[in-house]
Image (cartoon, rainbow, N blue to C red; front, side, top):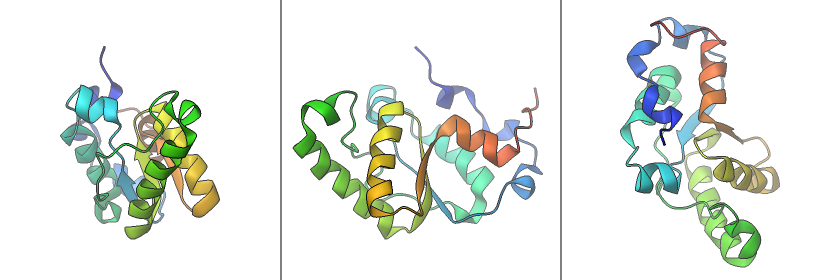
Length: 142
């Protein structure tokens, strides 16, 4: 199985993409356990996010640490899941991120639940949504 993170190349985006992108606060990236530990995907998403977010991108401390979502883990082990999420939220707060880009649905749900409660001005967005927002929905060059 391949992930969208493996197919997107920063060179596929025109140099004007960042200029057309909506302005906003700090952007960071959370590595899902599946992508970074299972598939070895680390560099690719950061390269694209850096190209599109520019100076607004900041590396998330402990970005490869689990957020506590882990599929059904958040539902079967809510106490442990909550403790893991609290650590992730502290790291997000430490970089004052307004947007946390994620590649996994369980991470998206988990991190957004925590952000709504602790930092309502911030949001987690899926990688594909971030790409769409930052490029204005414009197609990538072939």
